[in-house]
Image (cartoon, rainbow over all chains, first blue to last red; front, side, top):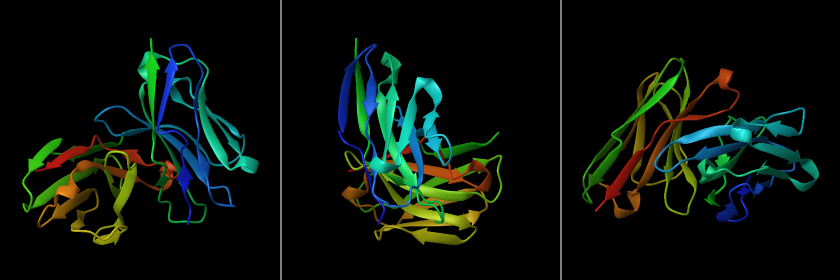
Length: 114
Length: 113
């Protein structure tokens, strides 16, 4: 069965530093890939998605992610962290040819230090 | 534009009491609807999904049930709550036009005491 692994349940960076949140999926056929962000006591908001085409995907709030088939990865990055980026981030996949349900990773909580 | 509503926003219930959480979607038709539960440290767990009125698929066997009495209404219920039912419940929708993107509601925080 498809699975999603987010390495690191907590990541802490300084304001202005690079943000790197890791996501790996398990299927041999590349799925659709998503990153969502969740602020405290709120629902999830889509940051970006990859379906096909260009492997570097740009999202909202300055985030981007790169699909690497050889590494079965879809890591999320942002060149310079802002205090407002503090939130929990979820990677999700949807298998091609499936009904479309999303499988989520367990999330990574990002803290940003001043 | 599409919007998704959930209520109540917060709920504190005693063990053994019933539960009814409601989710409604506006601005789209025939959506797929989803119920997730988020417990501390466990990520999002898909509980139920529905592709149409009266059609419910259960992902995890437990004491919860779901119903879809109208196209844009999704209800999560329980006859008797357990302590382990505490968590943050999220409803989401998607359709063919959304390209598998799921749009989430604001959530309901349930505490079972």
